[in-house]
Image (tube, rainbow, N blue to C red; front, side, top):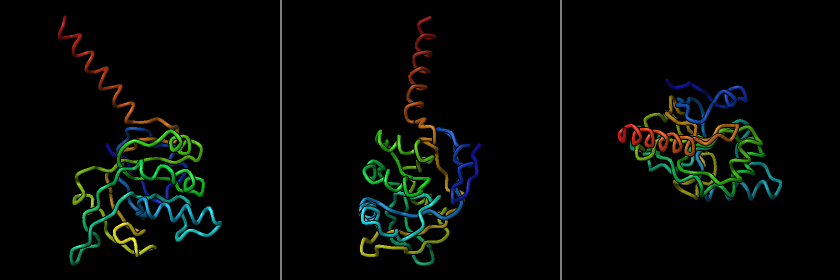
Length: 193
């Protein structure tokens, strides 16, 4: 059964999320990929304000395709998260509370997630058209020149996600791998008997 959560994320919500939980996310999320992350961190390093209030927010690592007529967005699948790793700790320090992507994160990001009380979600890879159906509104926020990689504010309803790294640093990719190996070893042991 999926947990229903809303944005902006609160510490109570974050503390109740555990690695492996399925969630349905409703509320506003911001899109950003590599180039937008670089610009955000450059602003932080220059002591300037970000183009949106990042406190409690969630960034979705996505570069959506153009919307068809009458739709808020085109296909909107997650991109590989590690490309944002070098920028992520600075954004978590500024109040970012959630990230949506796919794939592993580096040790520095995991430590920053724990330190700042945040969470990393995985979206369903290869289902970009289905994910787009959860997007009800889309508006440009910043960096229009980046095209598909500009920062957009999306309103999503019941976006299906899995908690990969929780605020305690538990990593579902590692947990799931261990559980699979144990299950496989147990099955082999039973076959041998």
